[in-house]
Image 1 (cartoon, rainbow, N blue to C red):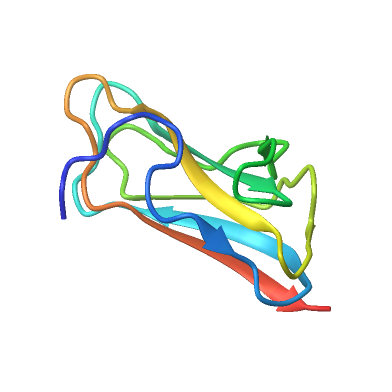
Image 2: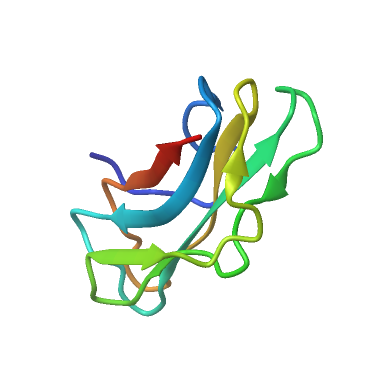
Length: 110
């Protein structure tokens, strides 16, 4: 329930448990950003200290004064058991930063 900030690895590093295919990503905030949008990127690597790369061809964003955003434009749709994912936040709003961010990655197992 706090104001979000930009940076890499903002939140827990997550290990993928099963082979899965991504279908969509949805993001939500309780406090809408103003002045600019929120931009979130999910990055994937094969080890926790590996080279992370985005899973999106178009990152999800929440427009200024809005509370939700989504993306179905993935550069990579397949996650493998043992992959690691992290969340990077590249923009938070310019006048008022968004707060209480939730990110849902929707997927089906393969």
